[in-house]
Image 1 (cartoon, helix red, strand yellow):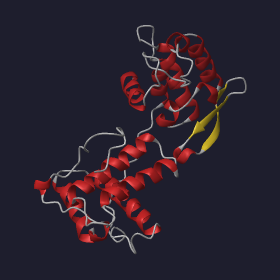
Image 2 (cartoon, helix red, strand yellow; image 1 turned 45 degrees about the vertical axis):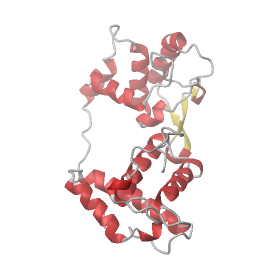
Image 3 (cartoon, helix red, strand yellow; image 1 turned 90 degrees about the vertical axis):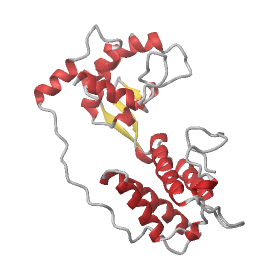
Length: 258
């Protein structure tokens, strides 16, 4: 069976379909769904350079399809099978956003198979994406931004790190995932520039304001030097164990200070 991305050598996938579930195994010599999902994920990882977070999302969504259909030959997965998969998600209470995301992953997967000439046409091509309610993000007011930037205090475990994170996000507008992917070598504080790696491995240079530069200098000179005892770890923002700070930790940090 296909292996989840997080663990390379498990004995079985957590989504493995048991014999009692009624799933039919792939015919001998036919390209099975699980094998092609693995090939697609390798393509996303090696050729498109997607982030681990994005890869895990594709993996979860396609393993859910595998769990629904069983490990059939890809030629036996038709439009009705995919519609059944989406209907099951709806019946289980999944939101329209979740269903739309999973459908997008399924479409990308079958488009990959068509491009590789393993299928003549995608069975997901004519399925409409569920309409999403249009919601505009709520912007912080000026006084809210000021309170947020001033929130880290001496009672917090890493006030200088947190202040540097807040100032850098405010100064550059970069994504949280881009911020946590930064290394120390990506900064050029002398000229106020930061090299950011975005989606698909694309890089860009982003100007950094003087207040954010000062906050970064303070963090690098104190807290990062204290926890960054392993010289092989070049991540800019570290946790208490000296490892790269995760996107989830930054989002928790933002929620706490707000």
